[in-house]
Each structure stands twice: as structure tokens, then as C-alpha cells.
Length: 127
Image (cartoon, rainbow, N blue to C red; front, side):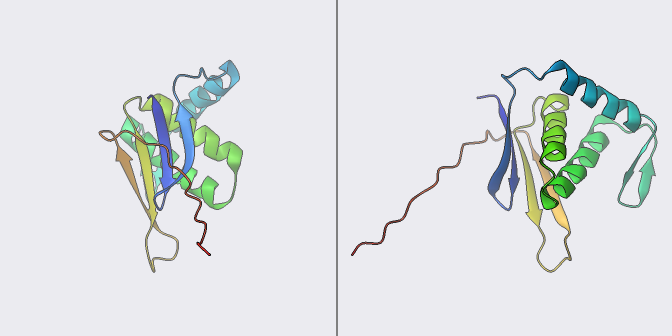
């Protein structure tokens, strides 16, 4: 299975299947993102000029969190695609909302644990 998944508080939000080819216009969008990041990015309060791939991934993941929180599906899909394509060994992005932190999250990149699709369980109470 060549799927990268984004989980929020343990629940899958997005799945990216690397077996499906990304359309040319979407690939071009990711290339333009990289070109803009060449000029520098802001992570937290730190400006990073000429960011490496890990810093770019953190930046994209932060934008992914924002997109999920604002229901911006197009941006969430773009950030998910960026992470899956630029980090081909990445299996999962785990986002956890920190309790009592006023919207802060922790983001973990998982490279060594395959994502397994979640299965909904239908509970029917016995009468």
C-alpha cells in the first residue's frame, strides 16, 4: 500500500494514494509553492531563508492544519499532496490538538508505520 494519511486526533482526515498520478496543473502548483519557499518561510516567529525539505514540510503541515480548521478542502488537498510527493517515505501525518493550549497542535511525521484504513463500526443496541 502506497498511501499517506493525515490524522487529526487519531481520526483520518485525508488519504493520498501515490499510485494515482497527479495532474500536470497540480504538479505545477506544487513546483510554484517550492519556488515561493525558496525566498524564505515563516515558521512560528522565525523566518527561514532557503529552507530545507524538513522545514518546508513543517511549513506545509502548518498550512494543512489551518486548512483543516477552516474547512478549506482545496488547500488541505494541496498541502497533503505536497507532503506525500515531496516526502515519498512519509506514511502518516499525525496532528494532535493540545488540551488547554488555545488551538495549538503537535505535528508528527511518521515514516516507519504503514497507515491502515479505519473501519466504521455500527453499534446496534440489543433489545
